[in-house]
Image 1 (spheres, rainbow, N blue to C red):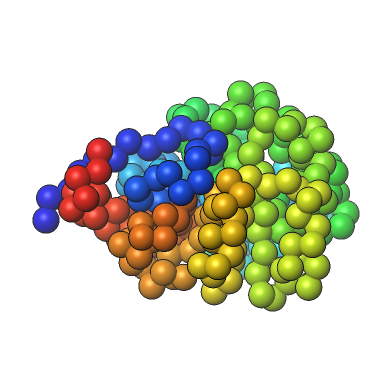
Image 2: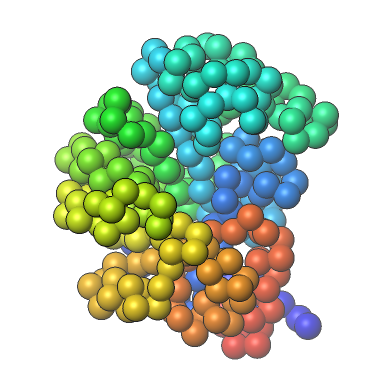
Length: 270
């Protein structure tokens, strides 16, 4: 089957339900070809045809931002202990590539500045703020300042399960699009989105197995966009298109990109 290239928006500010096919967002980069949340994973995602990527940021003990998913260092580095108990210099001294493949030995946890510098300004990036209580305002301000420094207000979406962090982001820099994340495993106030007025999110990001068509229709009627997981649609791009899904997060980037191109060809989408 022939495939058709698709123009990718360079802003998260799209009309809800307006895209014929969803944006394909690489979860932590192209994790099939490089260690998650590293510069190779991010640049590989761009090369593979992703419309954008998702990454995670945390605070170190000396109050600096670092791109890292887990709250502990153990799984994806040769370090141990909590990220927020380690200094920035220590986290940056760790090898975050060898666990994936020896070819990536020496990879370091990147900064958000480095991510922005390594990718085109119009490439969509979804930054998830990993924060619970301590540092809620600080992480929001540091993320906003980094985005502003690189003038990436349109192409960056900042998401969090913590609506208070999104509140501080909105107060600091209202031009940055915000995404509210929730899952069935979160405490009731989070999963029920009671505090979502604090965030005033433009995007809603249900975690795996949390999406529902009813909620999607509700959000779209309010002009809010939905970024869901491919697994909630059985990895079926046709089903995503029929639902008018705005964006899809995937760990299966190459397959999802090819599926989008194939469906675009069938639909004659340009």
